[in-house]
Image (cartoon, rainbow, N blue to C red; front, side, top):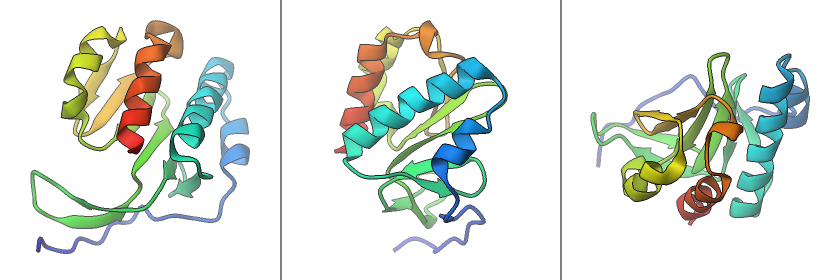
Length: 134
């Protein structure tokens, strides 16, 4: 068993909808609600706020491939950041083929970064989200 890590970002009882409605950038707010709906359908459950800016679905024990540390985390989620929309899809490497067809994006450490949904193929994103939710 890997080392148990303690992380600061934990589930809260804050309202996901209130958080998303507080996003000043109208396009980012609208895109966030689209992602929220896709993830709700994929997971067939309601989201939880994690910390003050991350929205997660499901509960998993995640083991970092880099450090071996284990944490309680969400299965899939996203965070509307100032610079982009950050989607958290564990084991992003398994989506390499889909990523090549997705459109304008960046990746890093298990995250998919998208500036706006208009930059990507929504059908590919939907397939990736539903696959990650399995």
